[in-house]
Image 1 (cartoon, rainbow, N blue to C red):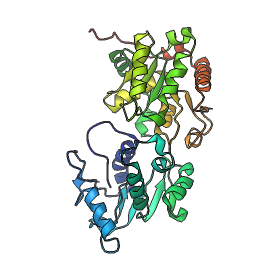
Image 2: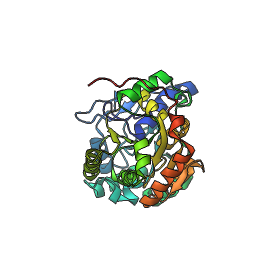
Image 3: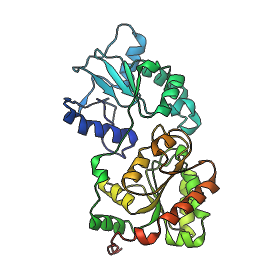
Length: 341
């Protein structure tokens, strides 16, 4: 199995991989993590025999002869970096975003990366899709034989279903100067996450609502987020209660921030699945999400679904969720004194 590199923020693929490493042994599987030995990047588990770039070049040059030797019964690739091996290869392909919607992805070497991903996807003996929505796109964009695709939905760890310690929640909120009941977004700041429209919808809400509820944005800066960061800074300078947490730290802290939220807002433009929606459900937080891509499949009617391109609709849904989750109920989370500065 190939986990994500060690260090830095953990994305959805990282969460997925860590969960497999944690839970597959309980199913009777002996699991050995491997990582591609990329220069300058710390890895988890054992390094694969060569870098992904070198293995890919050799694979392309000698497609009939070359196989990477792996001392395993099965290799599970949890992203698109797939090469031929001398054991069966299963790959989880989370979405076809880079190929179907290249405008939502980093353009650097995009055509080459997409060509390599198409070639790599066809090397897997079997493919796992994380949603039924993703299947048609994997067939269309990667040319994967639908007979070789199985759908296995994502989930959340059992720990998300346990009510977090109230004092610990209060301490985390106090540390970040958060008052319970806020609007919450979680995800990397990049175009497809649609955070600019979330911010615009929030700033258009009635002043009384904004005075009662902050907008809390949790996520690292991604590509092409400079305009968003300027808008966040301008809103803060104007006195708006917009809080950006780009380095939240431990997983427990994220769980605590979910627990303090009043409404979770996730109108993403594109998701192969959308784990944050499940995290919000597990935290008993009402959800506003998109009516497009895989998100209706994930929310299964339990969220308010909106057109992610309609800023007014996003704001109206945020207000509607406020009516069902007054701040008074969120304030049942005990507060602790804010740390002195």
